[in-house]
Amino acid sequence: MNLEDLYRCLPQLFEPNLNWKIFLASKRGRSHVATGKVCQDYCVAEKITEEIFVTAVADGHGGDDYVKSDVGAKEACNSVIELAKKYSRRDNINFLNKWRSPEFKTELFESWQAAVLKDYLAENPDTRETDAKIIRKYGTTLLFCVVTKSHIILGQIGDGAILLFNDQNQSQLFKRHNPKFDSKTSSLASSRGLYSLIVDSYRRVNFRFNKILLSTDGIYDKLDRGNSFALYANELAERVRTCRVEEIAPFSVAGIEVSEKSSDDCTVAIIVSPPTKEKNSVLLQAEVKDLDELTFERAYNRLEIYSAIKGGVPIELHISKYLYDENYFLDELGDKIKLLKPAPRQFRNNMNAFHVPEGLFRVRELIEHGEHLEKKYILTDDEEPPRFSNGFWLNFYETILELKNFFADKNYFAEENFFNTMMISARGEIFLFADCLSKALFNAASSRKNFETFESYFSFAGKIKCGEKILPLFKSPRYSPGQIVPELHTDAGENFCRVVYNPKAKAYGLQNLSKKIWLVQDKKVKPNQYLMLKGDKAFELPEGIRYEIELFAKG
Picture 1 (cartoon, one colour):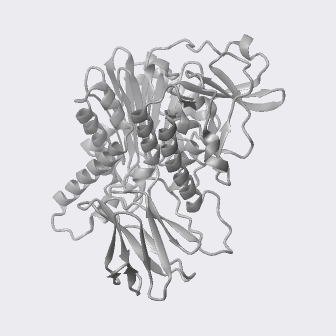
Picture 2 (cartoon, rainbow, N blue to C red):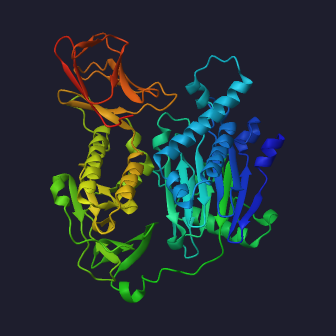
């Protein structure tokens, strides 16, 4: 084990101020010890200013393709630290807005990509490998937490887990996930990784959680059953509060050494503040005595969600800081939008009970699962459409664009929980909760930013249509060869075009991969030539077949 690897595995206790403690620990996996591989995890905590500190954990990918993933993990954590230093020079509002903006995601990826390319070229100055192939060698996940005086900012790409929990035995995963059956995960090296990075911020004044655990999958995957992970987190938090660093036993739960059950590297970072008493007094038994099986589900800024049974019927209970507006105009959007209104008032003004139809899915949870990233093309009439296909998400995305314009026209405010609570049916009907809409609080700039933040999870650049067949066109990330679109006028599946992006012109385009000339008004696009897209376009093939392109992304 070299000095770098030894340092990675030394437990560290860090106290950025009187209110918080941070504990970091890594352990090289049994399989890496047996094969002589270095620890591919990395974790770091750093105080940026008197009011800001950052914790980051990364898990470099295993496998023969990721020979530099230990460096990739380190550079991922460093990129978050450096961006925090850069943003800290801004005032508090702009600092917070930056983290949730689409620009932050781009800056993070570009910072990490530049760092790993620099590292590789320093060792291999004469390489002829493409940038994309080099970047892949450094593939890694990333978890991070930024704590400021007023907010907590969390981010995650890939597997592992961030658990938010408190001293009242309430907990929630920051990024929910489907059951894991293989080692496949999103990554900073993924071609569409930019759109799987989940980032959110929480106001500390109403934050339900005073403990945060960041864990790589070496530990989390062994405890991903029932309440095992929360039990482990609470035991670890108590040891961090009361024990010396050498006594903490970072990978132990109920007397079992979990790291010995895992062949993978194990890394955790836990952030704890002093014990607290229950602050939320609205759920008094006197007010909810007629509810059975009252269960905490999830907390967001200014909103807590509980499930319960009332009179034998399941309900969703919202405790909101807003009073909802009784006047709505959403019926103008037609059948695609449904409004979930609360049952007649039964509790306090800020408590609303909703009867949610069966078979609905929380859109935010689907995005956390990565369902919006799958490329599931439906090209023939006899194919059964899969659930959450590209067509499903394309229709959803176009509806969101309509909603953005509609809200701006009607002076409706789309606050964060409008997106966090939104639900959708398998048929694509969108369901909105009434208590997450407000006309009185309308703020055009904030509403637009919230829409743009939500849109940044989707990689749609536009769509291409031929007859009744429609396919989405995806944005081309930097160092990616771009999406290849099959021909739509036949079922042969031959390559028809490639989506490209010209950063200098700030414009998308299509490269003609077919063997036919495209006729665009009075111009011709020959095979291997490019059609610039600075707006919607249409062209025909020599035999009169027409293709139409509608562009969403303007640059």
